[in-house]
Amino acid sequence: MTETLAEKKCTPCRGGIPSLTPDEAERFRSQTPNWELRDDSHRIERTFRFRNFQEALNFVRDVGNLAEAEGHHPDVNFGWGYATISLRTKKIKGLHENDFILASKIDRMFGRPDALPDRQ
Image (cartoon, rainbow, N blue to C red; front, side, top):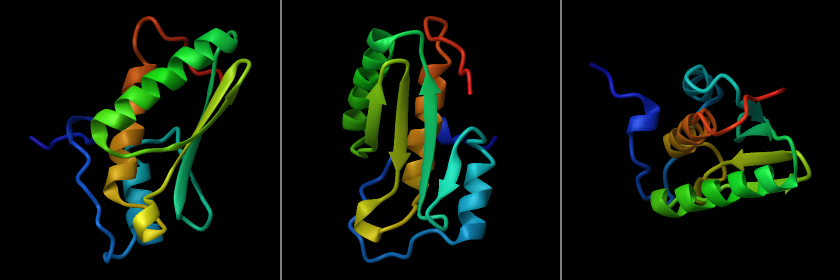
């Protein structure tokens, strides 16, 4: 049985390795279809929608706790009714499997029964 991205753990990236090629990034993105490849396949991004500011803030806090646990930190922008999460591996200035692992875990967290469906 193949391990899903959400079941994996982010591994420390010390740099000195190449970022994913656009084809490799697209293969990983197929496992996180709600995320968009951006900046010539150097980062991925997704906007989540909420009913109000408090729900967006709670989600951002949950993402922050997950990021700390994984040791992989996204860029986050949020406000009333939305949170945009952007991922890339800064040490290699591009995408790594870790970005897709964290994206998959964020998707799983967003899909919790107490979370709102994505209204994109």
